[in-house]
Amino acid sequence: MRNVWKNFTHFTRPRMPFKQPNCLTQEYATRLIQNVDNFLFDCDGVIWNWPKPIEGAVAFINKLKELKKKCFFITNNSTKTREMVMDLLVKIGISNVVLDDIVCTSWILAQYLKSIDFKDKVYVIGSGAIATELEKESIKHIGIGPNHEQIPDPGKFDYASLIKLDPEVKCVVVAFDHYFNYPKMVIGTSYARRKDCLFIATNDDAQFPTGTSHVIIPGTGSFVNAMKTSVGKNPIILGKPHRTMWEVLEKVHKLDSNRSIIIGDRLDTDIALAANCSLGYSLAVLSGVTDEEMIQDYAKSLESEKLSNDEAKCVPDFYAENLGTFEKFIREHIQFMAEI
Image (tube, rainbow, N blue to C red; front, side, top):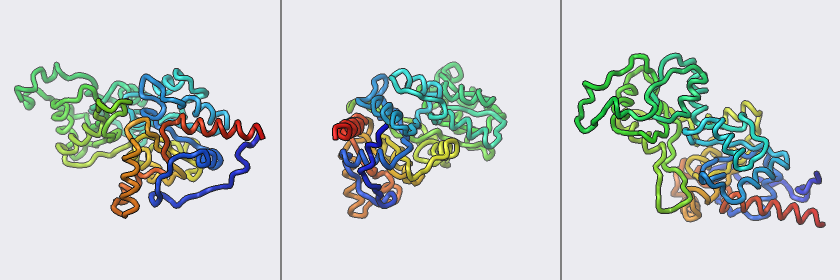
């Protein structure tokens, strides 16, 4: 393939988080393609607002693969296993996806417990995907699913007589749980306050992207914050913006952080990950939970030096309407270079 990027010189910018965000232009897009080898994609709000793919996402990722770029999919969504994420990517038309391209918090949880040689039982506030990943590593667990039979009438407040704690439980995990309720908080708190019990959260996202502005779907962070209050300590958090997911990819694929970019819709998880892991670049898309006003508010506060260091990490290098914008710029550049 002809090198259509050779007329562009290398460009750099000050290390994060000390910079202002730029709206993605054709020049910026072209230079990013030249200077980035590894593209890390969030899924919800970036590739899809399920069940619908977001405009241009599939075409853009497949174009990157044609250009021999490495594409990885890292999601804080704990309700999916890696196999489930791969099936969804293939279903919408993304080509050449393998399991090692995917990092999700349900899998990271199982790998983390395996790495510390955890041999006891886990009380899980979460979904069946976590059960699947734990069982692959022969890690025992309880708690997943509805618990109406255990506490038939929470209003009677007779927890002390109804709840029998399992002495084998030495870890409490908080993830997204459609059946989250007060009895689960009681049980999880009772375990997690023990001195010999780990307290782990898969992630602390505030809400899910829905593609609409009138319905807000609270995320795992809602459950995590409730549990933090009752437990009285902070959990170990495995998902973005913490370094764990990047460190797995970096080790397995021997990635260069300076030639890597994360593309996401959440400023406090996806974009902050770029700062925490010293990635070369970050791009926020406006197809999920972030809008341009939020980015500009951060930019104004950064300019006036009103942001804390953690807040400054949420300022992206670039932002675009969606992945379709990036795809359009790249397609137009390739067409232009082919004609000259």
